[in-house]
Image 1 (cartoon, rainbow, N blue to C red):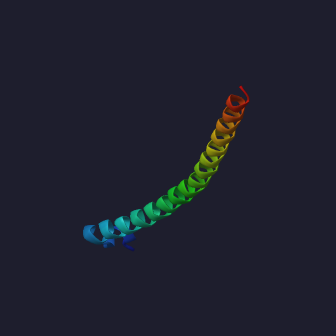
Image 2 (image 1 turned 120 degrees about the vertical axis):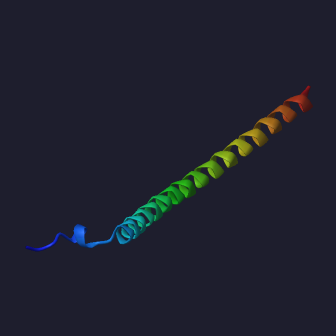
Image 3 (image 1 turned 45 degrees about the horizontal axis):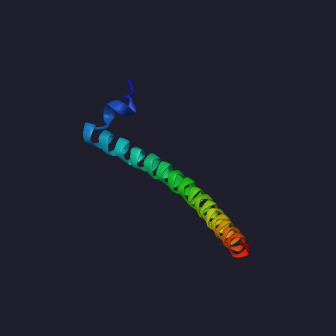
Amino acid sequence: MTMNLEQSVSPELRVAIELEAHEKECAIRYQSVENQLAVLDKRMWRLEAMIMGSTVIIVGLAASLLMRM
């Protein structure tokens, strides 16, 4: 009769193995989250630049209209 591997492993060792697997899974998830945040950061920077450019153009047009009056 052969013993199952789960039966031969102590509870402490089983917890350590499960914790290590959990930590690896979390590391993969956190890396994915960081990658997504980096992409969003680039998008936000582009949007901010577009808003600033639009604001400068609108203020410039308003100033030129006021100068003509």
